[in-house]
Amino acid sequence: MTESRQQQYFQLIQDLVSCPNGQEPDVLEANMGLIDPDFVQTLMEVATMQAHQGNQDGAKFLIFIARELAKQLGLYPEVATES
Image 1 (cartoon, rainbow, N blue to C red):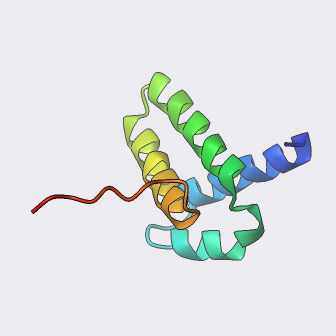
Image 2: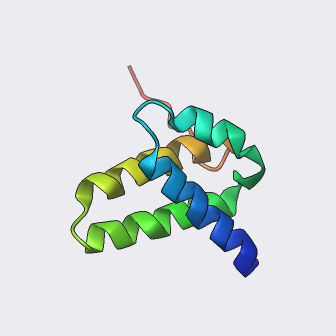
């Protein structure tokens, strides 16, 4: 991953954190070219930093987005639940 790409990831994360509630899908859709496994990894790294800095809500938000994107990218296995 290039430094330029990483900066784009960080900017997208900042855009997601600062956008009005409910606008996250629009922000992601406008930046589909950046949505890849490396972006999901970067989200998790930033979420971990947030958690270590005491920002649990921010960390949970980023982890939620990372999990949803990972599912869409096929990186998150669907676990069948037994009935």
